[in-house]
Length: 242
Image (cartoon, rainbow, N blue to C red):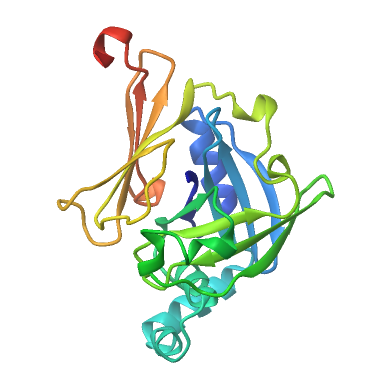
């Protein structure tokens, strides 16, 4: 199984794109999916960060209000499904809020260990309309435990959803996500990224390390970056690896 992408929900997509571009990332418009639109920061190692927002600012305010009134918590208690997870995205604070894995048939996930013990929502199909007119389709299942990942399986070719080429080249030299630290223990393991539990982090938070090919180090953090705790670090030398 592989880390597919991290979800970073934002209030305003245009602002998010501009601010990540100012840090030397190439940000690619993703398209629209129902009430949301997104953009992608795609890396050479087939991982990416998804910047996603509601297309309507008023809808965002309504979702935040429903959360504050406890209506979404009540719905989640009545019906535990994938929609409850997505409503958490839409109504919660800006920031890194979720983690997605791929590489296993969704129909087989619930029968595999250690995934068999976490409980999963029913599969749901989605599609996204890219700016070039191409329609991307995929299926999702989510762990019932909101602290665990959700899982993706492509219906259309994966490179429809995760574009290749120059979009994976970043002025800051970023090569790919190398480590994700979370406040909770992630049960499934992945082979392409180190995922570790850091009990010093606040509940629900994540820290992401992105390896750069350049001899540079930067820490992207603060309100202007939506509390996204992202480190851009130089690629370790062979001597450091040993």
